[in-house]
Amino acid sequence: MAGTDQQKFRSGLLAAVGAYVLWGLLPLYFLALVPAGAFEIVAWRILFSLVFCAVLITATRSWGRFLAIARQPRLVLLMGLAGALIYVNWQTYILGTLSGQVVETSLGYFINPIVTVLLGVVVLRERLRVLQWVAIGVSAAAVVVLTVGYGAVPWISLILAASFGLYGLVKKYVGPSIDAVSGLSLETAWLTPVAVVQLMVVSQLSGLTFGDGALHTTLLVLTGVATAIPLLLFASATRRLPLVYVGFIQFIAPILQFAIGVFVLHEPMPPERWFGFGIVWLAVAILIADMARAGRGARSEPLGPVS
Image 1 (cartoon, rainbow, N blue to C red):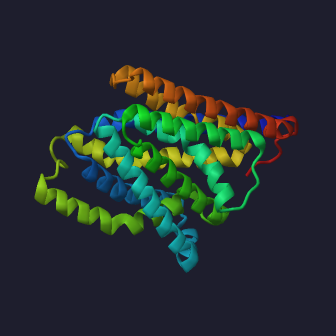
Image 2 (image 1 turned 135 degrees about the vertical axis):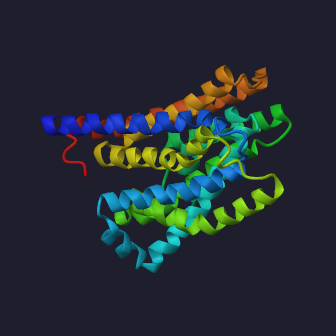
């Protein structure tokens, strides 16, 4: 591997690890925003993400590129669909976090890659390898076990996995036509009316917490930064790393979320829950083995200029 390629690989690896570590630590950040409720947090997250993206576009003098994208109705509508999906994901995730179900949110991101593989079959008519089918079957068994153990379907996990899987499908369809900042800008622009309505409703029902102390207000403002920075790191990583590496690293986030739920927040983990998660981790291990096998040829070749 040439020196330039090694440097790109290392910077991409650091960016990917940084993105998923930050995503994995998000439960602690959102819990620090209490007494703000989930609907207020999501609303501010949308608005301040849009503000932060506007600042980034201005700082990088990218308004020309952004406006060129905004003049393409197909891309704008697709970003509206992506915005609706990420809204469902954000709202579900924060509701789960604030209601003491961080472990269940982590389950959603453990099974998300498997849902993504399944969407490839259903929507894109892709053909799966044997191990991918096995991983899907094992993960389905895990959901059944967890449902029986809980006495209820793990809806938070399933909604998170489905919404983020569909969001990724939209982004895959758009491809390189939209950069990360422009994409997030359009998504949050679509969601701005929703955020405004949410803030109006919250202000009438329970009152807004924004302005209740300098630290609390600062943390709410920084939700925009906390949203955009991991996304930008991820975009940088995907330009520099083969996707097989990104596929391995993505499990850092749910592992951290699970650890926070169990060891920091002390959420209950009865035996049936451990058993269900064990089956999920088996499915993940099968998927990782398949990814490693499929990526062996890519890893044996020079990385080349990844851009």
